[in-house]
Image (cartoon, rainbow, N blue to C red; front, side, top):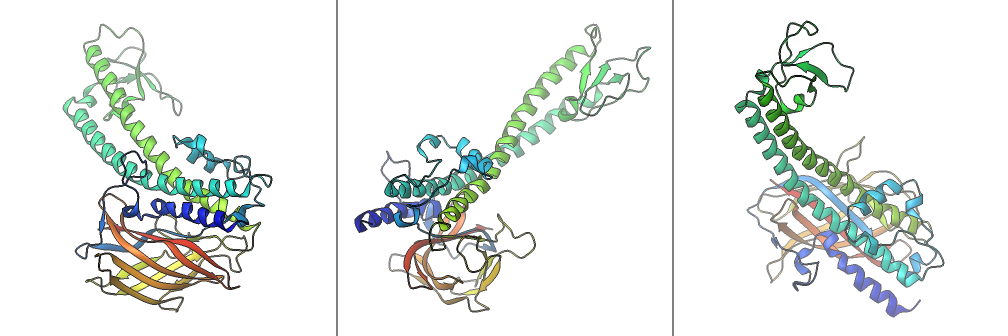
Length: 387
């Protein structure tokens, strides 16, 4: 394989730094979609959660790794996750959705890189959008509750004939008739009013105009709230799918090469259902790390160990850890992570993002040495909430 091409792939793949949070190094030209703002130097005045929110351990694939890759994700068992992510990307038509052995290895490596990049970018943007949506949901919910109280919607009585079947509305009159029950039913919220419909011929009733006004306003406000809620749910689901797409793609690549390219880490966002999640605890002045545990799982590709295991300071799998600050004022964290198939030397930047992304430790060109002596570059990232 042409070494120049491999070096170019590594250069392009290093643009994944946005997927891994090292946003301060991205280009700043106005015409580039990669422009990022909000990242600043690490601050010792901040309080960080010790629970790791998200983590990434990835080894960069090369043209040699992907040359025999044969993978049609939209036709496989994980197609729903791929479709979910692609449906929410406005540039999905520029991303590869099939990989065949006959494809040019160089182009295929670029396609793999682009998907990894897009996944990371989506996760960041979705997290920020969810924060906005959750604020909108809280605001609209509060306004809806105020409207319900101010308009006394529970004072509009529903005289119904029979209890409806599940999912069907109450068919009501605004006053009692010979066919209705004598005791009315009250609906206290706009959500309840969706279960409340009038039988025909109610126009002469005193409360008819008020009923229709409340019904119209409740429908509108509830529709807006539902739209925000649905979008928030979609973003949260697709954020998980975005990470799984990368793991899926790299696992398939592992099956046709002899290296381990990715691992799952048990975190708050992606917990191990039967075990603990990863943690890191700093001293109060951020001069040392008092606890650091990663619970890492290797999927059944070429890994010698599958299933979550603890890699920590306490058991010696994390060692040589130090915190220091460069002459440029950048806070750094350096350590060696000893995994079953490889040793990873991390020398990452600690940064704070003003948005919901919070604190990050990122090394987008971490040094990876496999047990067979092969050396690669990869990415190591952890994310923490700022309290």
